[in-house]
Length: 149
Image: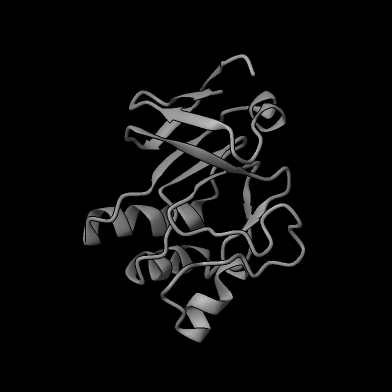
C-alpha cells in the first residue's frame, strides 16, 4: 500500500503510531460499549453495536478508531468518559466528518479533568474513510496530519 497523507483538525492533539480499526459506518459511542458500561466489563471492550458490522465484536480498548462520524444518544460523552475510567477507552478517534459536540465534550472533560487523553482529529475527509482499512499502519501527528500505510 502506498502511504497516503490526510490533514484534519486536531481537537485533542497528540502523536501516536499504531494499527487502524476502520468502519465506513458511523460509530455509536453508547451502543458500542454496553458490556463495559452496564456489565462492568474491565478486561477488554468488544464492540456491542451489532448494527456496525465492521466493528461488531472487535476490540475497541486501545484502538485507533477511524469512522465517518459518531451517532448515539446524549449519553455519548459520558460513555467515552466511562470506558476511559475503566481503562478500556480508545487511544484515538479519527473522524472523516465533523466531531459531534456531545462525544467531544466527554473526550475533552476526560482529558482535562482526568488526564486521560484520546487523540481526536476530525474533518479528515471522505477520501480518508475510503482509503483506511482495519489493520493499516497509522501515524498521527500533533498538527492533525494522519498518515495511512
